[in-house]
Each structure stands twice: as C-alpha cells, then as structure tokens.
Image (tube, rainbow, N blue to C red; front, side, top):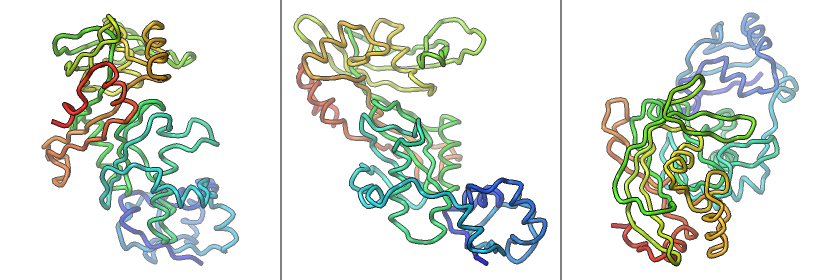
Length: 335
C-alpha cells in the first residue's frame, strides 16, 4: 500500500487525472476498476475519480509496490540535466505557483520528438531538484505560451495546477499584453495596427496572411510601434516594438512579411537579400525576434499579486550587438 498526500502543486485537478500522471503507463480503465473495488480510495472513502483534489487530501493505493512501479513512467530527465537545469534556465520570476524564464534562441519550447530536450524538460528538472517529495514528480509543469525554437524571450510555466490554470485563462482571455522586439527591412515611420486572417499550411509548416476570411482561417491582429532606425550601407532597417494582440504560430513573422517588412534573419518568411546581408555582416542565421515584455492587466480575473506587473526579458547579446552594428542605441531600451 502507498499513501499519496496532495500538495499545493497537485490540488485543483481531478482524482482520475492525478492518478493518470502518477502511473502514466496504466490504462484509464485500470483506475476506474480499482476505484470501484475500493483498491484506490480518497480520504478513506470510495471515490469515482471526478472529485477535485485539495491540499491535504490522502489517496490510498491498496496495490503492490511492484504494480505501482510497473505503471510509473520513467522520468526522461537525466541526473546531469536535473543538476544543471538551474544553470541553464534564465529565471526572470518565480513564486509558489508560476515560473517565468527567458528562453534562449535555439531551445525548443516543447519537444517535437520524443528524444528532444525542451524548455519544459529543463523546467521540470529544475522543479524536481527543488523538492525531493515523492509526490513532486506527479505534477509536470506546463507552459502557457510557446515560442518558435529560434525566438528568444519570456515563457510562463505553471508550477502548480492552480498556477497553470490561472495563467492559461489569462492568456486565453488576453488579460495581459505581449510585447516583442524585432528588426525589419525598410523604414516604418508610424505605429500601425494590422488586421487579417492567417491560414496554416500543415504540410509545409508555414502560414500565409490574407485580408479575407476563408474556411479554416483565423483572425489575427498585430500592432507595432517603430523605436529606432539603422543602416547597412544604403539599406534602412527599423527596430519595432510589436504588440501581439492575438497569438498564432508565426503570426508576427508572416504579418510583417505581408506588409513588405520581413524580419532580419528570417529564412522562412524573409527576403533572401536581407537574410544574406545579416548572415554575412553578423553571422545571423535565424529570425531576430525577442519576446520582450509581459504586462498583466488589472482585471479581477488576474490574481492581485500580478495585477499591473510588467515582466521583462533582457535583450540577448546577439540582438544588441546587431543593433549597435547598424547604428542603433541599445541604452534607449532601458529608458
């Protein structure tokens, strides 16, 4: 028999989902059968699996240790990754419910293949290192926003079910503002609001922007403000502060391309001549896009401790070096 005590990390979720995470290799039917037979009980009483767990609850498993271990999923994170996760993660903010990191360009937000190591694995390794509680491995941190592999910047993760659910609602309801920095081709003289429809091409992993709604398209809104201008010989480039109003994959890159102002370094949506110039001058081989700031609103749905708070990810050295290289003032970003 094993007794699992529900911690603040795990409260708020259903009992059946909790069990599925604890013994990830077991079929759901196994849990429902064990619940019916009272081989799994909640606080000493028969349960159906739909009960919401609260901190302090006890789940008793009247199962052999061998059965439990056989159904547990082995953690994919190695000891080396666990011990080095804190050094790898650039943590911007952390409390008991959430973790905000500054993801570097080149790191996946989530694994695309079973053998990938992404920000999620590093976050879970960091949390695993934080506590040795046997139940701590049950809750796997989830991220609330995803960035392309080569986009740097802020990612929010839930350390607890409560934190994850709260942040997911905030992102879904757009109760925060997401600001990015990028350098684009050409001179943009004024702030603009772009409104269009995004169509995803799954077979080619890219998207296109149109002005007319079609079947399967999603409305996208992107706002931007020019901050500075730079030059490479006679070519002018603009540093933009982009407000991502909606949040679709590749939205900023595709939306700006549709206006004739593609991102520097973008091989998928950029212009070949721009890509080659920045590759030759600075060795840049990816889109220069940084998820810079998250500004939480004052809505009652936003927990009080986050209301009005702005989190900022320092601009990567590669980005600032390029800014300086084309004549922009890096110190202006700190004002």
